[in-house]
Every structure is written in C-alpha cells, then in structure tokens.
Image 1 (cartoon, rainbow, N blue to C red):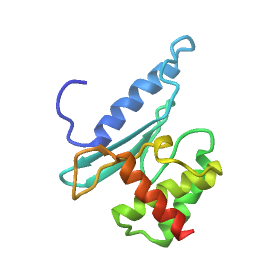
Image 2: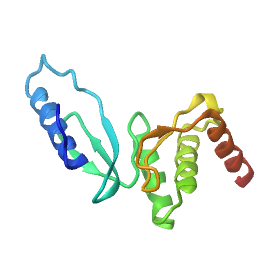
Image 3: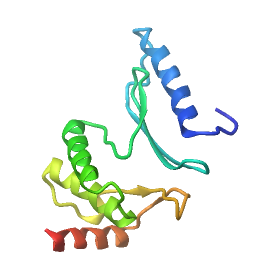
Length: 143
C-alpha cells in the first residue's frame, strides 16, 4: 500500500482482507503466518494489533504469536490484570519474563530482540544489547 493510513486499524483491516481472500483458494496460501503490528497514532497513542491469516484482527494491550502463544497470552493477561498501568520498564520486563516463563529459558542479551513504541517516544526502535542486559539483570535480581 502506498499512502497515508489514519489508523493502524485501517492497515490491519486491509491486511486481513488480503489474507482472508487468499485462504479461499487452496493453491494460493502464501500468507499463512500471523502478523503483529505495533505503531503510534496521534489520537490513540501506542497501538498493538494481531492479524491472523484467516482474516481476523484484533487490538491488544499485549499479545504473542507462535508455538506457545496460549500459555504466553495467559501469562501476559494475568500480569496486566494485576497492574494495568505499567511503566515502559515494567512492560519490557513483563515481556522478557513471559518469554522466560513459557519457554523455560534464561536469555542472554544476544538471544532476544525487543522493539518499543511509546507515547514519550513514538518512533519504533529496538533495544540495544546493553539495554537488554540491564533489563535481564533487573529481572535476575528481582527473582
């Protein structure tokens, strides 16, 4: 798509339409993957959408995709219910903790990537290895 979209919901809707139309034809299923979109909107702030290949999309406060997505989504849901107004640091730590809990792995900074978008900094950026190391150390000390 070329042009400006008013909302991430519009992009999600367009993506689901394309994905759903391809599922109607058996030999044309190139979009057999889940898409998680994150962005920032001037009216609504930070937004997170998940687009399924069958044409379903929904906005989330936190979500995951992949082999253990159910366990991960349950973990995230419990953590968000306890503390619905998290700081940026708490969100990052919750994401890392969810991955560690579900996969039963202690991560090194070089093994994970985390991208963030916030109201304070609406430009998407990936955390550096030094920032990830700091977050992992905080989590290790907390546990």
